[in-house]
Image 1 (tube, rainbow, N blue to C red):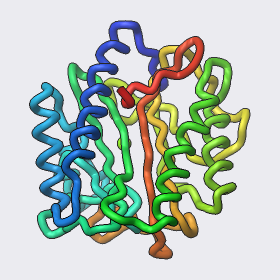
Image 2 (image 1 turned 90 degrees about the vertical axis):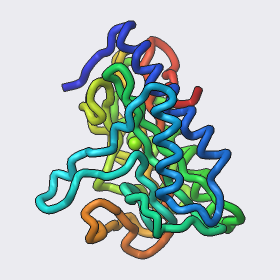
Image 3 (image 1 turned 45 degrees about the horizontal axis):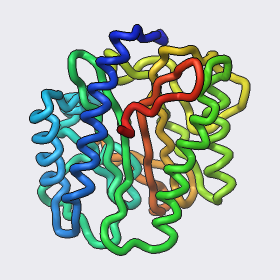
Image 4 (image 1 turned 30 degrees about the horizontal axis):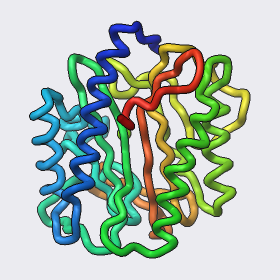
Length: 256
Ligand code: MG
């Protein structure tokens, strides 16, 4: 079900999103080569708790038999890892790595969801371009995030932009509505046909998240049951914000 948020609910959403945004500002200051992904995870968890939030991905069910719930605050996915990487003390961030971080903060019963790919140290020109295109794909998409337009208009704009730049979008995972639940309707694919899908209305809150691969779009899941990697070993990047559909331009709630 697609939920339309009231004014009061939007204020609560904004607070969760503000903390999500803050965590990224703090991560940007500390992320560096030599750090383990678990260290980064614990750092983010502390910032969230200091701001009265809850790390909403921690304990999230895998939905797969024999696969434990997600154990950490952040999903941290490096280089050819696309999404859902599990932080570990043994996983060290190296100079030149692309480190994709995904985070959901819950506060007062509402969620804020955003993802960033950090370029750590000296990355290649290709790697930097991939990150830039992934970020820009989000902004291409939200140009269509207005009342009367349809979900497919956003999906189409993202997919077209990415492919025009010679990259691929992940097909098996997508953006989503968000609110009291981390994942609400509608699903928002990063490719598709313009003019298709439900119509956008003011008060909808959506997590729009291009997941882009430098090579082919195929992916596979690691035996840990969580981490998603590129099949061809090429680099991947992720960029996500929670947005609010208004009467006019969309508001990006996790860029504050
Ligand atoms: Mg996310």
